[in-house]
Amino acid sequence: MAHRNSVVHVAVGVVRDAAGRILIAQRAQHAHQGGLWEFPGGKLEPGEPVLQALARELREEVGIRLAVAEPLIKIHHDYGDRRVLLDVWNVNSFSGEARPCEGQAMQWVNAGQLSDFAFPAANLPIIAAARLPAYYAILEGSDAESIMTNCQRIIGNGVKLLQFRAKALVANDKQNVLEQVLQQCRQHAVEVLVNADLDLDISQAQGLHLSSRALLRLDRRPAGMRWVAASCHNAAELQHALAIGADFAVLAPVMPTASHPDTPPLGWQRFSELLESANLPVFALGGLGRQDLALAQTAGAQGIAGISAFLV
Image 1 (spheres, rainbow, N blue to C red):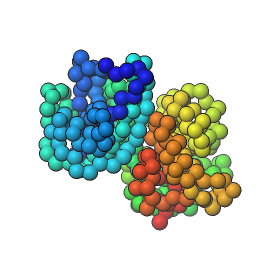
Image 2 (spheres, one colour; image 1 turned 90 degrees about the horizontal axis):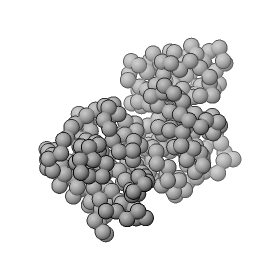
Image 3 (cartoon, helix red, strand yellow; image 1 turned 90 degrees about the vertical axis):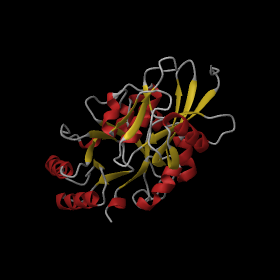
Image 4 (cartoon, rainbow, N blue to C red; image 1 turned 135 degrees about the vertical axis):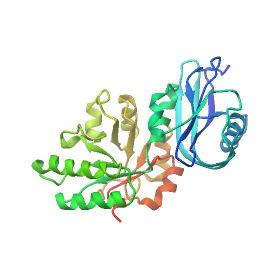
């Protein structure tokens, strides 16, 4: 049994097949959190590197050989009787055919189906991270025409998650332009979150994005939203986003930006330090482009958020 004051370090794999389906398995009834579903993985042996542990667990549990893994998220969770650190990796390249080597129930499911299964509480941020893409575009423009042009460019660049911010529009135009954006995005399976400061009818959107001011005014998650996101700039705001049940956050600015030249950037080291205790997926924002994705993910980010980054 794990000692109450020790932390159980667990390597976890979000394993995807060629069709993008994700492998999940059911925990044995006699195990901790027995009967619940989980992503394959297991505890590190003393002195064992995390990727070595992940490769061993995947081989022992589901009979596949790890080829390439990329960092996804780290989750610290206290179950009361034990504390765990889930070190989660995307596994998109492996050899062999997955099979239940320990007699466990096992399924391949689409990312959108994960919420249909009962997982341990510590796995909930992993589900959000598994469902989220690597890019989050912020849609701006000086007028309706430029916003629609920018929307087309964002979609053309393969982005599947977008925040409608459009602060420059006059109030009477915002709802109409939002409806045009939603229609265009539906045709390309792009999900749209609407910035909460706009105070619009968002019933047809997929979610709500909270500014840091809006975030700090709330003590619970807004109801009825598929996605709730929050803009954060420090540890306190990240912890408040987690406390109200936000699905993910955007942390900024990572690098110097022309839009906020007087704001000191976090830099990658501080960004990574803040993510160590965030316990939810976080996009990096500020002075970044698509070419920074690998660097951001190495620092612990879900991916890159940006305005101009997805217009070229």
